Image 1: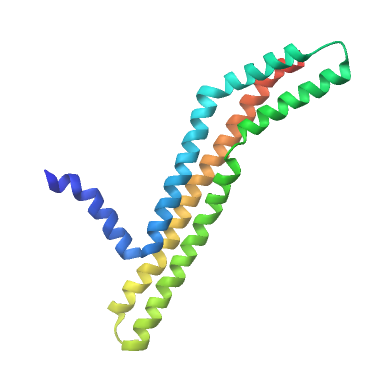
Image 2 (image 1 turned 90 degrees about the horizontal axis):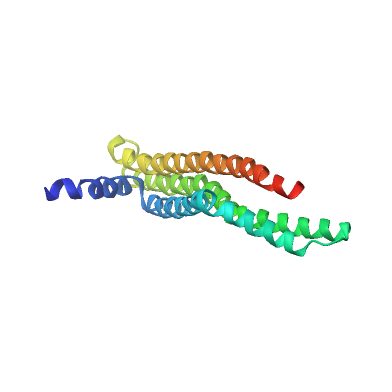
Length: 174
């Protein structure tokens, strides 16, 4: 029973040992990125309507007879909505871009290990070189996979939120 509970931890530990320390950094970056993505999804699902409604109510309270001033208040309200809807999106995009670079860092460290093995044993021991090659390819693959999933998530979030905000902001035009 305990074996089955510890099996996922053993698999992750083996994967990190095969790919090097850079994989651990990649997992932390991916975890943080998905926390931010989850927070944005939660905001869009449960809080966005309240933000738009509150901003619209404040707009209605502040409007008067001066059309120029009303237009400026509307622009201020829309800017506030945009500011809140875009919070953390640039940070998520930065983490998406960082993952392949961390993967390349893992590639470099793995290749250094291959060159060290070749310097000590020569090219006659392919088994020793294979360990370094796996440390070179696993971080690259992991960084790209994390980046691709984050890219799909951020694209979905931006498309979803822009469509939703455009529908909600139409109340300002009426």
